[in-house]
Amino acid sequence: MKRIVFATGNLHKLQELNQIAGNCGIEFVLPPKNFNPIENGKTFEENSYIKASEAARLSGMTALADDSGLCVEVLNGAPGIYSARYAETQQKKIDKLLNELKEQTNRKAKFVCAMTLVSPDGKIIFQTTGECYGIITEKQAGTNGFGYDPIFRPDGFDINIAEMSDEEKNAISHRGNALRKVLEFLKNSQ
Image 1 (cartoon, rainbow, N blue to C red):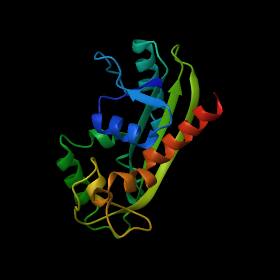
Image 2: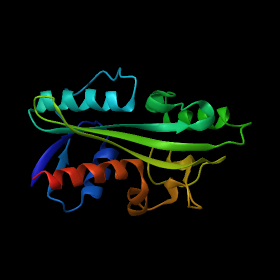
Image 3: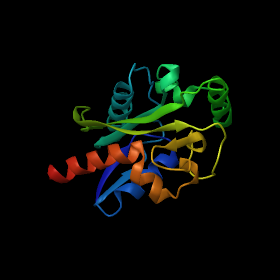
């Protein structure tokens, strides 16, 4: 089994990646404990590269990173790359976003995930993006998932992501869409 460092401290993301990867012969593992990159990029792609190159440098292994966030159309793409730092707690992030959309009829949004795969020496091997389109609901629903999942309803569904099973979410999520492209690349490059 091939091991690739996944540049995150978020166990939910690591579990999600390994679920999506399934039995493809790749196991994603956490970076060393001292992994603490400074995400000062201006795009999802730049932040993804910063994290992947730092994880590769620390581990001496091939590394994959994602940078993802929620982009709301009427807010000119906010919170965007600042999704994780939008407020102090996840509930406060949700409350802040719902408050900002209180008077809005346009609730279109998308989750974006940029993934970057780098070699142990920090060179980009592959980079891709996955997206999931939907709307921000007026009320929270569901207890599965994490982040903004309780207020995001994907196009074509009548439930929020937080109301879906892991399998349903992974089949349509921005992270799932990006990771499937990475796995396809890895399969074809062996």
